[in-house]
Amino acid sequence: LIKRRWWFQQRGLLDTLEDLTEGDFKKFKWFLQQAEILEGFPAVPKSQLENADRLDTVDQILDTYQDHAVEVIIKVLKKINKNDLVKRLTNVNSASKGEFRKRKEIS
View 1 (cartoon, rainbow, N blue to C red):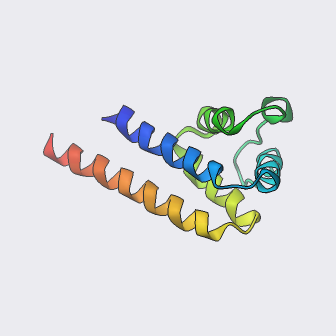
View 2: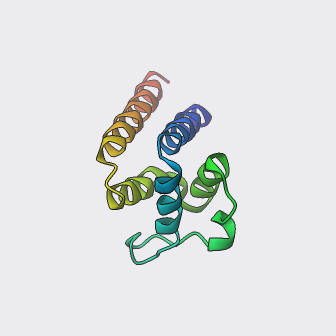
């Protein structure tokens, strides 16, 4: 069940990054390297993002932020004015949490 929730989160993050233009994706990765912007979350080292494609970036985000990955991505998306993607990612995240809770109650 937890793996399924993790998969939903992974898929939602990847779909979100795939909707960024190359320029926006470059800005997105730059903001992930700025600890002061991430408000309490660690920055991802430049060396880990420099040549990262979208799949590698999702893996790095999940490794670094784990359960807070969506929260961090939302912060960065707001910084690059991608509020449409913030809204969509919030909906995907809520749906995966809702399914997780529902299945947990059934167990």
